[in-house]
Each structure stands twice: as C-alpha cells, then as structure tokens.
Image (tube, rainbow, N blue to C red):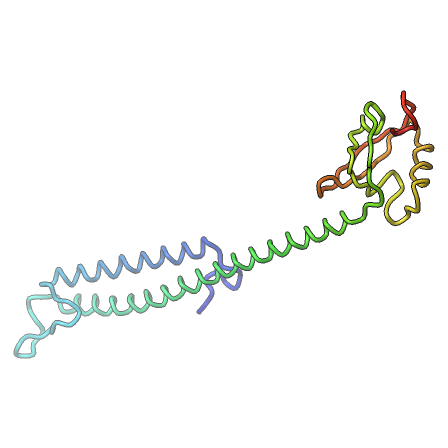
Length: 201
C-alpha cells in the first residue's frame, strides 16, 4: 500500500483525508445505483436483452452498462481504501503508543537523575535558632545540605569546611542548596552577627 503521507509518519489529517475519499466513493456508488433504479429498477444482474436476444428497448442499455461497470470499479476502490484507512489507523495508534512509552521512559529516567542528584547531601540541619540569619533565610530543621557556598559532597571533609566559608562570607549572601521533602530547594543565606551565637544560628 502506498503511504498516503508519502513516507512520512501518518497524521490524523491523513486519516481524515482517506475517510473523506471513502465518503466520496460511497456517494458515487449510491448515485450509480440510483441511475440503475431509474432504468426500470434494473439492478446489477438483470438481463439487458429481451426474450429474442435483442437489446431491451425499454432501458438505456449503454447507461446501465456504464453504471454497472462504474459500480464494480468504485467498489474495488472502496475496498482498497478501507484497507488503507485501517492500516493508517493502526499506524497512528502504534505511534501514539510508542510516544506514550517514550514519554514514560523519559519521565522515569528524569526521576532517576533527580534521585541521584538528590542523594548527595553531606550534612543535615538539626536546629535553627529563631531570629537567626539561618532562620531568616528560610533554612528548616531536617533540611539536608547538598551545597553550602563552595562546599559540596565532593569536597566536604568536616564541619570546619562550612565554618571557614561562613567566616569568609560575613555580610555576603551565600547560595545554599538543600533537599527538603525529596525536592531540591535553593536558599539565599547571609552570615552576619546577631543577638545569638555564631554568624548563622
């Protein structure tokens, strides 16, 4: 079967075009049958000659023959077209299914990437003093720290790393990334002196 889309993937509008063509053929077949009906109700198989073997004088033999011939040709076209419609629909559904499977696979891969990048926390917040710079920035207890300024899971050795970053960043905003409830959250934290202990609280 020649692909109506000319080798490119079948689209819904290709199928609609095939269905329109099918409707046209059906209308033509109906018109031919009406023509036969108009010729004294002669159908596809009634004889076109009289008892003596002469062409019947009460009908237009040529017109009847042409209509019968057209009906046969059109029915063949109709059959072929129905096959095309069916194949096109199959292809369309198969492509939708494939696309859906691909989208699902991508979503799973994305979730895997997310969970891998989420797995690299190196410290956990166990307390936040009210009114402290940490509290003001929105840090929360149980936040898992993934990045603290320049410190991340790859270069973190001990809490002294964080203390050093904090001392060097007094009064300057630090970018802090935490995992909260399974999602990455970015917090802007500015270490500074406050009523309590340390620059963070």
